[in-house]
Image (cartoon, rainbow, N blue to C red; front, side, top):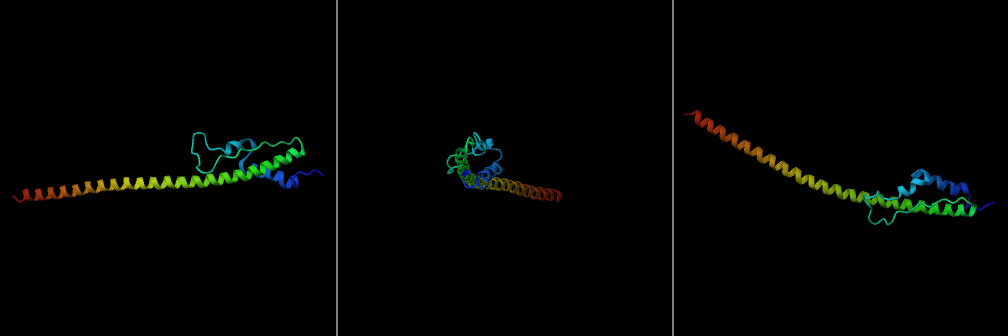
Length: 137
């Protein structure tokens, strides 16, 4: 019987199905593993892994393909985990900065509103005092 690397169904086919279920058909895998062109790039994750080609010309080439796909799957999962962590960290920093900026804007606007309200209260009191003074004559 042919080697097929520890049972074709157990390793090769399931690994291929696992990758396909994870990312869809094999052709978009390369696009999936790359950061968006001109977009955000994760720091500290290294280069995105490149999906291998599957060679089914004969059993030995297919077995080698199975090994490459398994290695790619491991590298792609590691890369995706790193990207998710880096993204979460950067988004949290952006959110904290935005919240701090929004708080400063809110506090400044609230201070202006209080100053205007205080001025209206003062002017209203002065107007009443002036009215009462003139009415008493």
